[in-house]
Length: 163
Image (cartoon, rainbow, N blue to C red; front, side, top):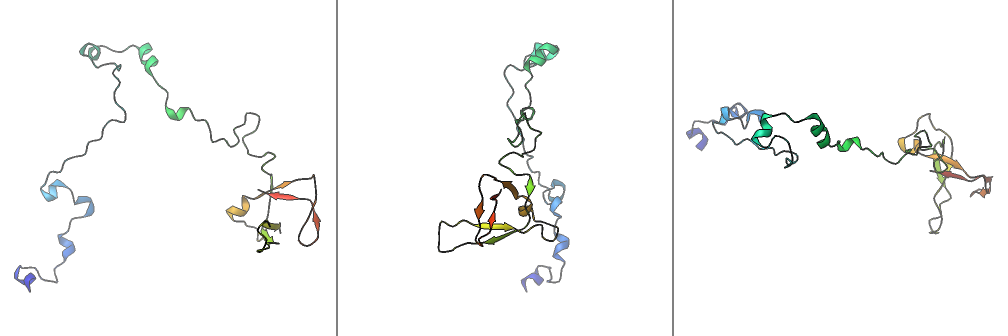
């Protein structure tokens, strides 16, 4: 009832009276002048910078002096991420610790829940369905020919390490 006394009915379109979000702080719409933000410089000016005195401002700085003051960008000194950065390799992380043969789908077997010292083991059953998830594609095989191992089924296979 009070809204009817103020001349606003409950059926008025309230959205027509609201400002758009991009115009909500515009001084032309609100009539209020808002303070504009201040963005300080990214680094303070050096006291040795050229052009601070009136004499320096009237003259030009020599090229030799400008080049002597120039500092390289931090991004120019990229040291790499440490993967494949060896000078005697072609940049690929393939060595004795990372295999170059890709594993297929791994199926778990031989986990004894009562034995805390049992390792999680898996068999490589080959590529399944022609597509692998990112986790499966990241698994590679490292052959260790120094000894053979016996699996849970009594079969002897050369040991394979999955990385």
